[in-house]
Image 1: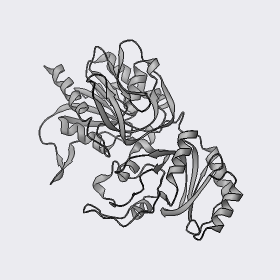
Image 2: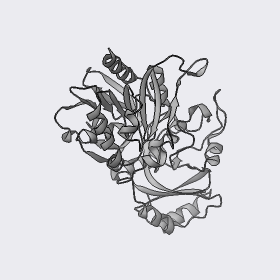
Image 3: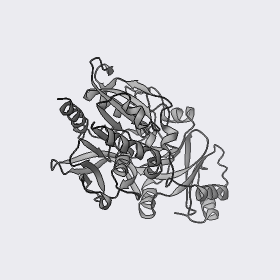
Image 4: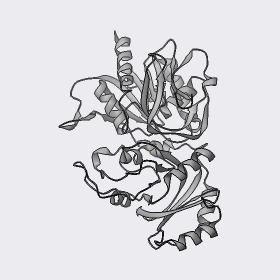
Length: 396
C-alpha cells in the first residue's frame, strides 16, 4: 500500500496501462485500476463482501447506502444482470471494487452487461485491484472513509480526493433510513421466485402484516408473502397510530442502512408504543433487529468492519442448530446491555457478536442476519414461518 500520493502517481505512470480509476483512503493509501460503469466521483465508507454470488442483489440492497463494496470473490459480472434480481429500483451502494474486470455475461437469465447497468444508473466500478490486500486493510484498520474516481483519461486530483475522503462524515450518527424508505404506503403480494413461472402473486387471504420500510429488500417482502402474509408496507416515519389503525396481526421491522441510534430517534418510540398498546407478534431483521433492541432497552455499537457475506455461521440457542446465513451490517446490539426479560437467541460463531434476541414472555423477536438470503443459503427461512405461527397462535 502506498501512503505517499507522489509515489503512487509515479508507480501509476510507470505502469504499461494508464489507470482510469482510483480509490483513495483517508489515510493517504491509493489503489489504481480500470474503471467501468459510470464516470465520476463517489465518497463513502468502504466495506468488503465475501459472497460468491448475488452482486446485483448486493448493489441494490438499501442497507449499503453510503458504502462502496469490495467483492472478495473475483468472478463478478459473469452472469450479467437482469431486472428480476434487483432488490430495489436502482443501485444503492455508491460503487463496487473487483479483482478482475467484468467479463461478458454467460447465463441464460442475463439481460445485460454489469458495466452498462452501472453506467445507466450512475454507479462507479473499479477493476484490477488487489482486493485481498484491500480487504486486509479493512480488517486491520476498520472500515475506512474513501473517495473513488473514474475518469477515462486517467486524470485524478489526488490531494482533492484525499481531502474528500477525510471530510466524509461517516455512518455513525447518520439516519440513512429516511433516504431509502418508500414515499408512501403500498400493498405487496409478490412471492418468491420459483421455476418455471418466476414470481407468482399471492392469491389467497393471509395474515395482515404491517412492514416498516427502513430500506426493505424485495426478497424479504416476497418471503413474508410466501409464508402466508398479506403485507402492507409503511414508510420508516410511520407512527404507532398509523400502524394500529390498520389492525394488523403482526408487525415486521425491515433491514436498512445507517446508525440505528439515529434512526431510533423516531423509530424506537413507535415500537415501544405498539408494544404497550397491543399484543401482536413483532419480527425484525438487520436494522429492524437493532431498532427492536433499542426499543427494549439495549444499546448498539459500531463494529470494526462489520459482517458482509453469505457464509456466516450462526448458532440458534433455541434449537441448538448452526445455520449458515447471509449478513450485511456494520452495527450490532451490545449483548451486555440486554435488559431483563430479553434473551439472546442467536450468536455469531465468527466473533461471538449478537445475532438474535427475543422477549421471554411475548412473541417478539428479531435477528441480525438476513433469513431471506438473496444471495445466500436458505437455512433460516423458518423464521418467517415462526412469525406466521405466532400470529396463528394469537388468533386461536
